[in-house]
Image 1: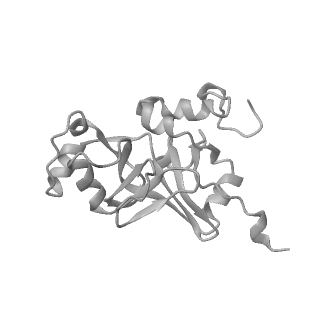
Image 2: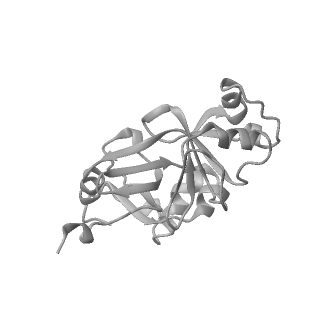
Length: 192
């Protein structure tokens, strides 16, 4: 029997940082996991807005964005990897024309090509989306090790939390999918 059949696959799940998370980069974060294979994992932090709004980012890349209220939407810190690169998490549509898009099985789509931003600027882009700079990445076995050390909780993702819940409430909303609240979590294993 092959070992890969026993492997967990957390694609299309939220990773919720536990209070004892050693890495301050991820303290208090919720990560949407776009891809999880034996080679590693890639996700986007969904609850850490930056002070950059869409209009200023679009100006930097020579795109004109004049659609209210999009101009004031925040750009998010998606993770510490490739922080100069944009990642757009959006609802998967039928036959999207974006040149670099990854469909998440059972979930959303993540696009890294500029054409999705051009579509947004022209009013033809995805209706609901979250734009991040950077992503979170794990090498082979790294995420599994962090999970075994109780660094993360995981739960099936709910897109409504990404698109409909204010950023500051997303951690609590993701925890509620597990039936727990922040106050119930302890940084020490074995204690409630």
